[in-house]
Image 1 (spheres, one colour):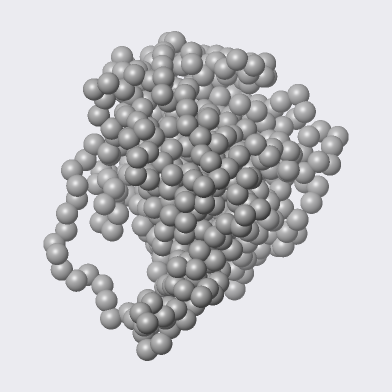
Image 2 (cartoon, chains in turn yellow, red):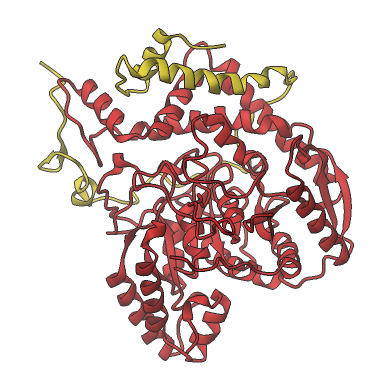
Amino acid sequence: MSVDAATVRRIAHLARIAVTDEEVPHLQGELNAMLAFVEQLAEVNVDGVEPMTSVTPMDMKKRVDVVTDGEIADDVVRNAPETQDHFFLVPKVVE
Amino acid sequence: MTDLTSLTLAEAREGLANKSFTSLELTDAHLGAIEAARVLNAFVLETPDQARAMARAIDAKIAKGEGGPLAGIPLGIKDLFATKDVRTTACSKILGNFVPPYESTVTSQLWRDGAVMLGKLNNDEFAMGSSNETSCFGPVVNPWRREGSNTTLVPGGSSGGSASAVAAQLCMGATATDTGGSIRQPAAFTATVGVKPTYGRCSRWGTVAFASSLDQAGPIARTVRDAAILMRSMAGHDPKDTTSVNCEVPDYEAAIGKSVKGMKIGIPKEYRLDGMPPEIEKLWSEGAAWLKASGAELVEVSLPHTKYALPAYYIVAPAEASSNLARYDGVRYGLRVPGRSIGEMYENTRAEGFGDEVRRRVMIGTYVLSAGYYDAYYLRAQKVRTLIKKDFEDCFAKGVSAILTPATPSAAFGIGEKGADPVEMYLNDIFTVTVNMAGLPGIAVPAGRDAQGLPLGLQLIGRPFDEETLFSLGEIVEQAAGRFTPPRWW
């Protein structure tokens, strides 16, 4: 399988990464090189094989559903590019 | 006084305990070495004030007969580990000036045991790379050079800063992380010892995530013993990481010197690649002969799905990365590049903040997880992963205790020499990536030098949670091969 220019743009949009028209051919080449490399997996017989979900066999750990942390709003927002009164600021989403 | 930076961690521990020198003296010696070695670009942030404060505090404890297993030992920390109030960037522009208000579990255990932090070490951006050339702080230089040549070589990656700093004696040991070979490949390129523990052995909490089902923290050190000492402090159950395994952490150092008589060591025939350089082949047989001379029994084993590990990895790892890196959106931390809408802000931020390799992997990961392609790529890769793990299980079921392989298909290469073709770079991890796919422990130990004088390493792969056997066997290789120190040119 290989990707065309329109697919490259679609993937970039899904990944929320802006790409310029000039970058598309280059990216297309790189993605197709990677896809060609992984193509060999098609020759493996995987009939009846369970997909791996956990590499170390273990039961999912659970904890009591209680608050374990909090009251650290200053810390939470301290690295944000824009904040106001402990809120993260983003460009206007609702007109 | 001898040059304190040339001591091993174990020797320094002894010197501190019998008060031959203080942690402050040891720390100052290393801070001086770091300053003199800036050309290597191993550190992306030096923290001398904090280092001296930590050293003074631990000296006071040592004086009172307190301390801990790493009391007074100066270490370097890969910039993938969150360090409280100390900038942590994963060497990506997108994290910018991120200063974590928390400490990673692994590093907190090092400080609990008395270690001193010298600073943060360079790595490939988000640990994606095999040469440390994708860092936003620029490439790291390997302290090793080809004989009679001034060409600057890569230290391997992604833990290139860790490997370079340890090899150049800028720190007594370093933390590192390994998703496809990022501890063992740079260790092999710099004649250092690198351990990738069993998945779940070290907590991932507070370590910048790349591919969560593969990432594992481990040490890089100058000797097998030093690596064992560091491992004991780094490992252990952490309730904050659901994949951290609750099983006892043994005294790894005690495994060193243990007899390996009668132990079965597997030599996997699928690792004998076409066109493998004869010196790698020779190193591998030498390693086998050393283990045999120590009483181990060598058996040929088969891991039939070996060749599919790397392609499966390049589906699983980017898929997980695309999901993990979705958090970098310019809202909660790091870089923000404005846009007319919130969507455009996300897209501009991520275009500007991610380097080429990261962008490539996020995009491929997005593609293989997208509707219509999930089954053909991601699901198939996860099934292949099950088969890769089964290969190892079958092998261990036949009584094999560990598997011996080369660590890398070549010695270190020049900065800028590879990379035009991403797949060529990926082939660096061909011997190491199987271990991550199967969740097993692996160790890379320096074992010799190539015709140009560059270090080469051997890898030992162990059964789950049996790192001890790797330390026992690794030390036999180390004893036979001797230690290698780069001549100082910087």
